[in-house]
Every structure is written in structure tokens, then in C-alpha cells.
Image: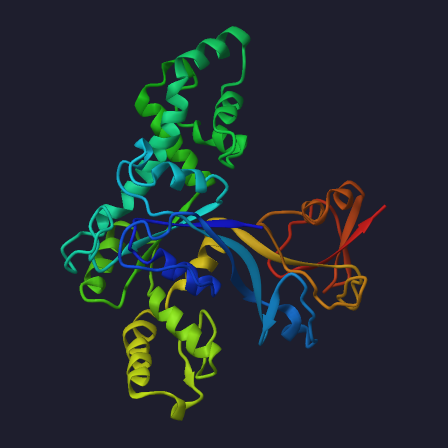
Length: 395
């Protein structure tokens, strides 16, 4: 399952984002280091299900379908808040960095209202510049990985030269456990001198920065977007970082709870909500809901939580959704479940890649695929498209 890390300073709303995205109940408080151990839970990304287009009912197994929208599970990790100097062990730095090892993408939560300082302590709204919080996270991770490589760099150079080893493979071994592929390392060092013995400390850091952007991309979430000062700060942030998502995790949490209690009609990602039980709402609840409608949904087109998850999976990781079936005519598995599984797979993948994703044995025995919509055979070189329904034929 794809793993996403929710990162950022303490007290910026990471746990609120995590709770609203996963319907979990993680302790929240207004002080640093509330989250000490990494919390893990299932969240969902959304994609249009083929069931409505095909005018059939579906019986999902690994996901769920709500009104023609397929909710596909991913894993979120809410890690300990990071403070400057984490790579030196400051705060909960070592714990934080260890929790990031297997994440494929970082969702970096910042406090757009500027009401938390660089250590995550509450301060007067607008007194801290959230722009300062964006670059420090990457810098801390870069310095952490730099420390791993630099500690043995001189010895590694001698070993590579003496044994005529591949430098990419050696770096990969040093960074084992971080979830970084050797192909990422090869690509990350393309801009550097081919003679690795000439690399300076700056070159090593440049290579690591390239490596992070390739293997562990980061999405910036400007949380608390409804609070004073946030709107102006978000405009400033977007001038430097165009790919920023305004969000209000607390609003998403409130809407999801109201929906769960049958008070409103709302699902994550919606741009609005409908009140179902008007008489059951107190005046304060009505005011709170209208505040969210005016200051979050109308202003930003949503709370930003579902948008962030979808963007992380479908844009940053460039994944698509494919539906494997056994009966290409009925779109079912061997138990008769219609469109049973929604598989997240890299854009550009082939039916053979899909077969291996399902099971190694199926990949080894792969012969060809069948595009179930068109009922035509597709070979191992066929490039899968989002929403494809594919039957795998094996020998």
C-alpha cells in the first residue's frame, strides 16, 4: 500500500489533517510534541468508478464506491513534529526522520496564519512568517542524509576506486532502508561531475536534494487557511511556490463528524454541503457550519484535505487506477464480484506490470492482457490508461 507521511512543525495541524483524512482519533493539544509515536491509519484517494459509465453495480473488495466515486485506500503516517536542528537530534528529530524512511511522498503542513513560531510554540497570529517553515523541512532531511553519506565518504571513495565498484550502487547501499531506488540515485547525480572523487560537500548536498525531489516529492499544505492573516500569507507563498493547497483540516473534521451524525450531506472533497437535520442543529452549530461554508468552501472550493491526498497520489507520484478482472465480459473476479479491485499503479505501466503488482506468479506466467471495455487483446507493451479494466491471461 502506498505510504504518505504527514510532516511539519509541531502545532500546525498535522494531527487534525491526519484525523480528518482517516476518520481517526489522534490526541490533539496546543503544545509541541503531542504526537510522539508515529500514528498510522488508512485514508482514501478518489477516482471516478467505471460502474456508472458501464451502467452496472459494483462489488468492491479492496476499496469502496460511493455514488460512482471509488475510494481507494492508502496509508498515512502522522509523524512527530520537526524542529530546526532535528538532524542533530534536537527535539524528536531522530524519531521523526526514522519514521519517514518508507514514505513515498511528504505532505508538509504549515500554519498559514503565522500563529506558531519556528519551534511550534503558539504565538500571536501573523507574528511568524510561514514562508520560513517551508524550506527548513527539506534542509533537515537533506542534512540527515548528508550525515549518513559524509560519515564514511572518504572510506567509500577508497573502496570504490580499489574494487572498481559502481558509485550509484555504493550510495544505494549506504541509504538502504530509506525506500530510495538505485534508479533515483543514477538520475539524481546526472548534473554532477562524472568523476565522483571531485565532488565537494556542496555537490553531495545537491545530489541529495535532487534525490529527494525525485524519490520523495513534497506537497505544501497551507493549513488554517480560514484564520486571520492566512489569505495574504497564502498569496505570498504562492508567488514563490505555485503548487500550494490552501486547507482547513479543522473544518474538514467538523464536516465529517456532522455527516457521520446524519446532520449534513457531505463527503470528503465536496465543494459544499446540504443540511439534512436543521432542527437537530443548535444555533452555534449552524453558525459554525455557515462559517465553514463562507470562509473555506466558497473561498477555496473545498477544505483542501481530499485535494491534497489526490494530488499527492495522482500528480506527485503519477499513479493511475486500473481495475483487474478475470471475466472480461462480466467485469468480475472468480467469485462474481463486479469491478472488485482498484489498483494504484505507475502511469506508463503495462499489463505485465499490473500482473506482477497482483502477484509474482501471475507476472511470471503472463501471456497477454484483454481490454475488457473494447474486448480486444493487448500485449505486454501496451500502456495502461487511468480507468482501464484489464483481464490478465496466463499460461
